[in-house]
Length: 278
Image (cartoon, rainbow, N blue to C red):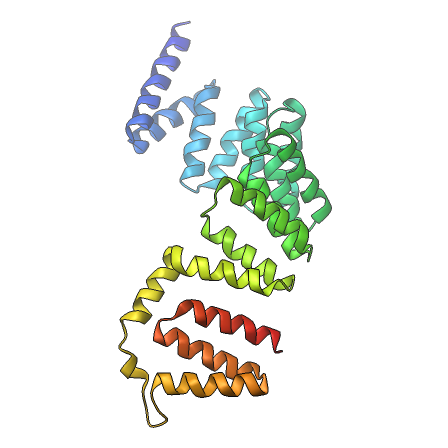
């Protein structure tokens, strides 16, 4: 009994070290408890978690396997599956995660990571089912929606991908990466005007775009003048030529001229029109 109280006291001390950010001391205390003649199972699990955060994946796996040998539970099997996933051992990940799912059918994280593992294995059908199962239990799960959107996009199922993207944007209307993917999908669907509209909005709102826009606008227009005329003259000539000849190359050159002038919306509009002329 005294030994048990001693283990609990040491474990409490290790937890205090961990909460305070002193991971070295926490690791030492957990390790002492884990390597005892009778390992303290909670210490093994916490030590595994610390090793995982330190990217010492083999050490983390050893801790979790020892813990599950002592007593099985769905969280430890999930941790084992997650370590396999991080190590790119996707088949082993699925096996461990399935055990976690069988032990607790309401715990959605194993279902989610199983879907990611199946995606890595190229099993699109199984991955799709996993992500859909997650959304049945958690309709607002952003990871599952994003994964499905990308899965459909890569499979060429643009309309289904767009449906997922639009669901995501209802939750996060200003999510830059998702909106960029949406513009690509619209472009692939031939909905050029809508795609251009999305890009123009991004160019005025997304940090990556706005920084570039400010940089371009900070450059004096005179820098782009040369023996062939001013930037305005070039734009006028290219507009006339592009309208007559419907040449995508001229449209791209015109788009660059607008970009250098700082008229980003026109640059995007002309660039998308070049696609229509191909």
